[in-house]
Length: 74
Image (cartoon, rainbow, N blue to C red; front, side, top):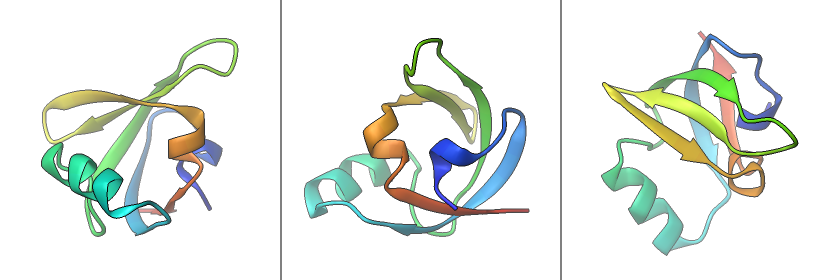
């Protein structure tokens, strides 16, 4: 299941990222890496970004990027 398919207020763990190395490195600096637990906070209207909580930070991820991050519910 990808990150964009998860319901709001759900805690998930990242299992895989189908991303380029530079994208993986950038997300890793923000705390998003395989094994990280995150909370899907909300989705912006009209297909906008998904807002996730990582540690104590809220991060916005675009739909295209979020759909390439595989997760499983905890």
